[in-house]
Amino acid sequence: MATCLCDAFFDDVAKATVQVLEYLGVEVEFPADQTCCGQPAFNAGDWKASRKVVRHVVDAFKGEDPVVIPSGSCAAMLFHGALLEFEKEDDLPEVQQLANRSWELLDYIVNGLGVTEWPGSFPHKVSFHRSCHLRGTCSGPAALQLMESIDGLEIATFGEAEQCCGFGGAFSVSHPNVSGKMGQLKIENILAADPEYLVAADMGCLLHLGGIVDKGGKNLPRFHVAQVLRDALISANLLPAD
Image (cartoon, rainbow, N blue to C red; front, side):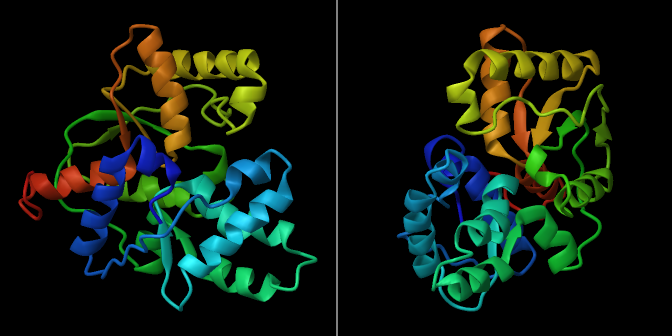
């Protein structure tokens, strides 16, 4: 599942995800009728509208294969949020079946495929923002495990790392001032660690924090973890450079 943010803003993340999975020998199918996962309406409290979207997702991704998602929040929507809003619905079993085979990308690579080290090099100092939806799952540790195994990659830790960046989907729209202040504090802590890149596994966070960085005239390129893995493979001539 490519997610709305890949479709609208982060197409290279979708491409990098496919390249990484195919390098690992995974056959990737891309249902052309996929849409949103239903998370925006879910977070806004409009569960009736969200269930309509989730039912479309269930139909678009019907089958037995794993559904791999380069987004902690969209993955959590399918294996957690959707189950909550379908508790009293007759088609809960179909939603549960999809939830059981939904994976966040890094969790799938490490804990689904058993890949614990990554080849190639990425000779840069990066700060890894572990988004709220990665906490309490295996995805955050999986991302760090893979990146820490890449030759030359240095993780730059920063203060108040467990604090939310302030995005929160609809929260950033309904509470823009609080959201912006939270993002500014996050960026101040990250910049104090002097990284060359800000890396995350949730594009909503990257979009929010990137806007604050750009508006403030700062120089801090942003990468999804999938792009780091892809570029490491290119460095080792395991993937062709485009």
